[in-house]
Length: 222
Image (tube, rainbow, N blue to C red):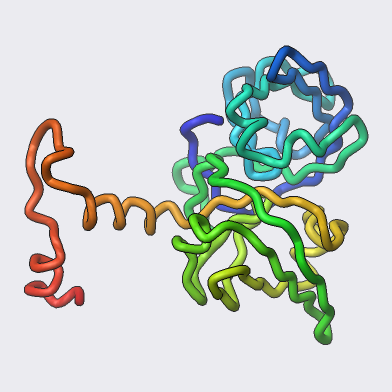
C-alpha cells in the first residue's frame, strides 16, 4: 500500500494475468489499457482499492508487489488469475475530485449480505465489524473495492449503499454475490478528526494543540 491519493472513481476494469506467491506475499501482473496511459514505473494504481506501486510495464500489462500486510487486511487472497479488478490511477493536481478522498489503505473487509434491485438501482447490504462501522455515518462516504459510494443506511451490524447503473457497468461490484468479501476503506477525514479530538494528552510526544471539544464548542462547531 502506498501514500498517494485517489478519488474512488474507477477508470477501468482490469484482469489479473498472473499471481506469483512468495512466502507471505505476491507478485502480480494485471492487464489494463486506460490506466497505463501516462503511467511509469513507480506510479501508483489502486487495485480493488489497494494502492499498489507499478514495478514494471510491458505492453498492456503492469507488475506490482503485494506485501504480507496487504494480504492480511484485504480480500486479495480470494483473487486468482482471471479475476477482474477495479483500477484507478492516483489523483493528479488539477483533476476533478468526483468521489471522495481515498488513500488506498484498506481498513478491513466486509461480507456482502444481500443484493436487492429497486427499479434502476441495486441495494447492497454489507456486514462488517463494529470497529469499521464506528467510522460510518448515513450520507457519508465509503470506498468498497475502491469505489466511492454514499452510505444510505448504517446500524451496529451492517451498512447499505445504492448502486446506480453507471457504477454497475464501470466496476466489478454488481458481478459479486452474497457471501463475497469486499475491501473497505472508511472516510479518512473521520479518522483524523477522532485522533485530534480524543487522543490522550499524556500520549503526545512533541508539540501541543488547543483543539479540543471546548474549542470546537466555543467557536460554533458543536
